[in-house]
Amino acid sequence: MMAELASQSEYDTITKERKQIEDKLRRLARAYVDGLIEERDCRLQQKLLEDRLEYLVIPQEDETLEAGKPLENLS
Image (cartoon, rainbow, N blue to C red; front, side, top):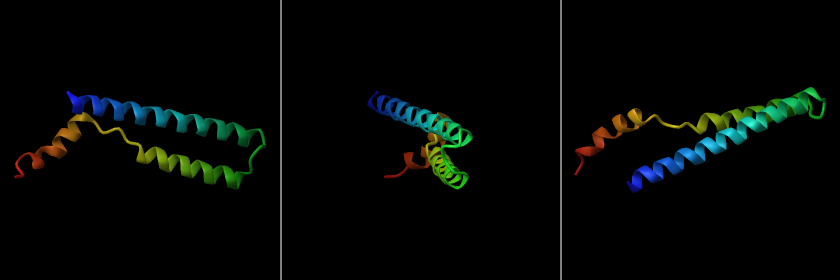
């Protein structure tokens, strides 16, 4: 049960952070369109935010269970 709560908490944290980054990407695009930020700076910030999004992957439960199967038999 504790593992499930920790898993749900991690899921919530990752989901929240992904939404924040997606919001930042939208605001960044608006700032560029409005001429408030130069293209070079926009592309750099966009790349950094997209890299962070790639890192914040929510693993599928099946994939997680499958990945852990080899660990079940370890002493």
